[in-house]
Image 1 (spheres, rainbow, N blue to C red):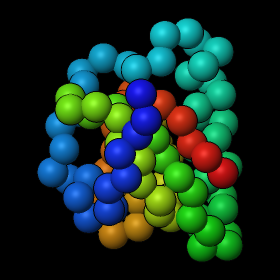
Image 2: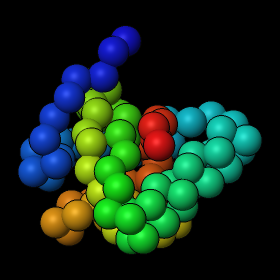
Image 3: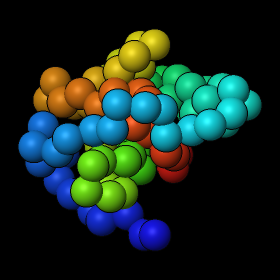
Image 4: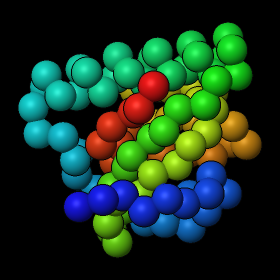
Length: 92
């Protein structure tokens, strides 16, 4: 299934699943490593990345700057939040 592009400002309108979309600990480790790299790119170079995430209505993709990656959520430019457990992939 292909992810539908949305604008960063639309992220607050979607509903996220309650369970983690990744099944293995290896996949989760890779996701977090990519998120940390995306955060460094965002803070150091104001570089944008593509984030693919699951919503209750299907996959979505947004291109934006990552400000912070905590254990539970990702903060994008403009104080937009995405729960880490909903993120499928980060394209650097």
